[in-house]
Image (cartoon, rainbow, N blue to C red; front, side, top):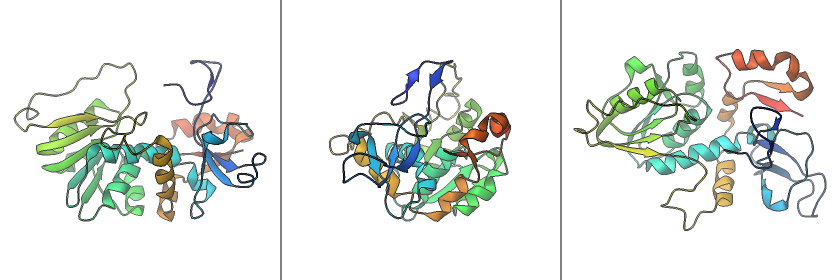
Length: 262
């Protein structure tokens, strides 16, 4: 799971990160001065091949463009989910990726999309995106498509319970090297559920013949032209101030995506 242009290896020392939005200061004339997004570790100034850059659309401010990688992941999840107009969709996990996936799903005509999370504070963020919200105890049943993005085995159990007959469940969580118990008893077989993995490293097979990763990222960046998405970026910190506050940012359960300004 190495990031592009990563130096070093975990645990430390390592130069990591992959979501940077900025302005080209020097390079080919047609690129100089342009707003761009790049999958590059956190750094104030860097040099990369032009091929590593994607232009940020005029309607997307750089402050929001940092969500480009997350939106690309969410787009891939929705493609893997095969959501169709009119589907009842449940998204388990109201983190950044889960909320972005729900945001895309809700834009498909006729869909009923609801976000499920154990933290009631996420309800306000979901509401700001025009999304319905519920606790796991209130999770709907008989959904056509369920997306699991909580990163918790308990969330996966909620996702399986929300799936209707012959529904599609997309597992978008990343568990690393953890062993995860998956409750495949109960209704999994009798309901003929389909469990699908989703990972942004590859474009789904149904689109791979026509969609490059660059084309996918361009689409993801264009989908950020919605001011409501600023709710996912409630705060930012100057890079030089991070040593004093970063631990508190990580400990704060309300933190979604915290922007760093260089």
